[in-house]
Image 1 (cartoon, helix red, strand yellow):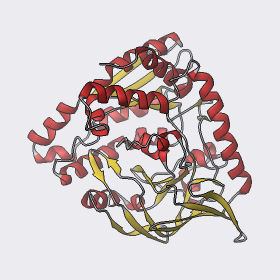
Image 2: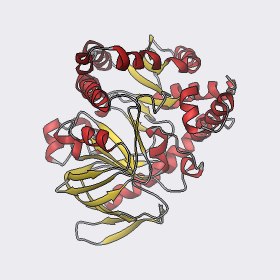
Image 3: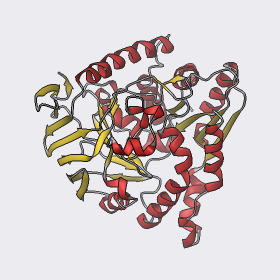
Image 4: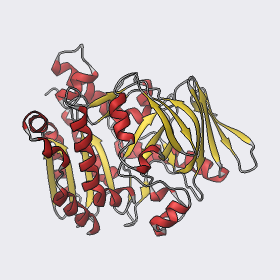
Length: 409
C-alpha cells in the first residue's frame, strides 16, 4: 500500500504516548480490523518501548462479518460474545488500557437485512455493557485512532483507483491526527491547551442551557446539574491523563436528559453499523425524541431509537467550530470519529460520568438525579454548520453568544 511509513509510525507513537499515555507495566487491549495490521504492529512496538506489560490484539474481518449475515441461522442475530466482553470488563477493572483502531468499510452492512443488523447491534450492546461502563465512566485511559483500509478509502474517494484512494485517505487521517509535522507530540500539547481554554471559558459561565438555531433547527438543550465541559486531554479515574479521541476538535458536556425541547436537523449523514442514515430530522419534548424522520435509513434510525428507554434522550452535546481542519478538508469520512469533529453534534444515549463536577465519585443514581442519561448506546450525529448559531442561556434567562455562523463568538 502506498502509505507514508514515517507518518504511519508517528500515528502509532501518538496513539501510545498522547492518546493512551501508556504507563510502564500497564497492559493494553487492542481491537482493529484485519486491514489495519500494519498500524497495529507499530502500535505494539511503541507500546512495548513505553514499558507495556502485555499487548493483546483482537481483530475483526469484513468477510467473516458478511459470512454471518449471508449464512447464519436466524437465531444467530440475537447472540453476542458476552464472555469476551466480560473478559474485557475484567481487564479494564485490572487497569488495562484500551485502544480501538477504526477503519472498517462504513457501508459494509448497507445491503443486509436491517432487522438482522438491528438485532445483532442490540445483542452486542447488551453484552458489551459491562465493558462500555468502564469506558463511559472513564475508569481507564483509552483511545481511538484510524487506519485507511481499502474498503473505507473506496467510500470516501469513489472516483479514484484503489491505491490512490488509500493514499488520499491516509494523508487526510495523518493531517487530522496532527502527525504530518516533525513534532506531533508537541503539536498535540499545543492543541490540548487551546481546547482547555475553550472548556474553561464555558465552565466559568455555567450556562443552564444552549440554544441552537439554523436551517431546520430550533433546539434548546438544558444542561445537567453540576455539568462540566471537557475537551482534548483528560484525566481518567486511574490518574492517567489521556486523549481518548484522535483526532478531536470538540469541547463537550452532559445535557439534562429531561430538558431538551424543539426540533433539529442533521447537517451531515450518520454512518451507523454499515448503514448510511441521511436527512435526520427529530423533535424533542421533555427531553425525549417524539418524532424522527430520515430521507435515507429511517427504518434503521427508528430501530436504534427503540434500543431502550435512554436511546431517545441525549447523553452528550459538543461544540465544534465550522472552520475545524476536518470540516475544512471538505471530506465526508463516513466515520463518526472524523465527521463529529467537523461539526457541533449531539449524542443519543449514554452520558459520560466525567462530564460532571466530581464525576469520578458520583454513583449512577446521583448522575441520574443530576440529569445524566443511561442507555446501551452512545451515537453521535452532527447538527452544526456555517449557518448555525448557538447561544448560552443563563439561569436568569440572559443570552450570551457562543457561536455565530458556526464559529466561536
